[in-house]
Length: 415
Image (tube, rainbow, N blue to C red; front, side):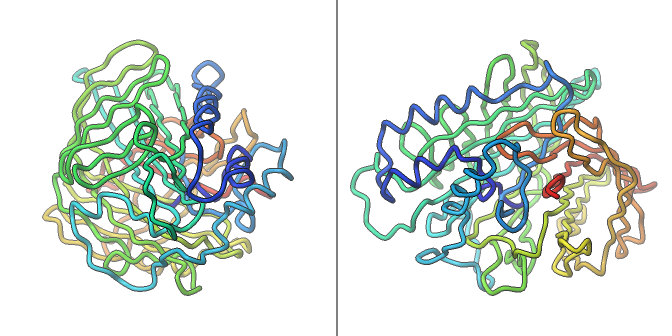
């Protein structure tokens, strides 16, 4: 997973222009509360598709935004894009991971996210996909000791989405807030990350997610069935050749999940599997990179596969594209770009944005000597949030390797 922070619309420009670092006042809360009500549940319009990005840069990597206010958005994004990394920690080399401490925030880095996705089923077999993500972004480094918990240089936003596969409807919401005890934040002991009353909390191996908006709600309990997986080089995931353009990245690839969903006011008891991606970093992608395609797949034989390919503006694939195989017993194998090939098999054009997204893929995974056919469970999973991306539930058919998963697409429709 990557991050959306550097693709924000001008919503955040008042914070960067009017408030000094570390001193966002309580009056800013009204803006964050108003913003959350502008998000649409796309079920009443047409099917929406979901995706989450985080580190793609609006200037240089071309995040898709609405056409209006593009110039003002560029001005605001230039201030928030993360191009100035002075004073922040950078991900230069592998580090030791410690849990539960690393489940919590790393404020010395500029951006961070907690990213859950999953496929859930009722006893009757009705299927749902879901996403719940909390993002943290620092406006300025922590250079001064804060003695007032209400003074903050941190901004948070969260995305919630439910794919109702049977009805082919998609419900997506977002919230924004400054960091403060009553509004938004993250902590390690006990683990908790929240934006207003959207909360994920518990422990490393057991987390409850509760989030509601309108007639939609998540109330889920997740239990880790495997240890955390360190992605890349012992948790160091390089995004480009520039020094420090990397993140610290771990995943929990199989989380047994039970609970309830409310969709259109109807309650469903569900169970299934979820996936957590955790990353924190300071750097943005390189200017020659356009976006990425990310796959998190869970197979019936209890194995998992994560792949991502970084797409370059010249149409080629970055050699830093990577992945990870997780065997049923928890053993892992890092994949390099030469170990796999991703071949799109179709596309889908959003009636809302006109963006043409890949829709269906063949994944050629050489170490497994297998070709996986990945198909969206429904096409309409484009996130109607401030930044447009596609994030959705998928089916996987590979003969002896069958399962479900999630796919994220960014950087399309930018030319």
